[in-house]
Image 1 (spheres, rainbow, N blue to C red):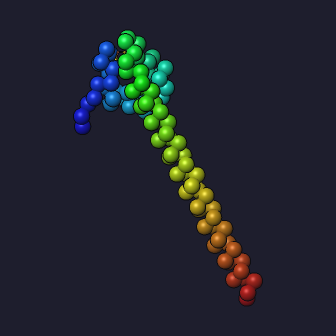
Image 2: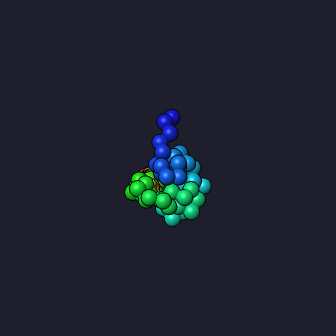
Image 3: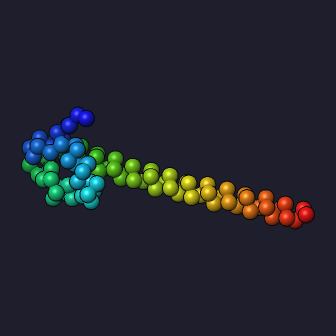
Length: 91
Ligand code: FES
C-alpha cells in the first residue's frame, strides 16, 4: 500500500495518523500532541482535519448501522410475536 506523507515538515504519513487515531488520538489536537503534525508551517492542517472528520463520519455510520440493525431485529421480533398471538387467538 502506498504511503503518503501528510505532514512534510514532520515527515508524518497517513498511516501514522490512522494508527494514532486508532490508538485514541482522534482529534487534531491529539494528533498534534502525538505526532507533532501541524506544528510547523501548518499547511497539513486541513488534511489532518479532513482525516479526523472522515474518522468521525465513519464512526457515525457504524453507529447508525448498529442502531438500524437493532431496530430491524426489534421490529422483526414484534412481527413474530404478533403473528403468534393472532395464531393463538384463532385457535
Ligand atoms: S506540513 Fe505539517 S506543519 Fe508543515
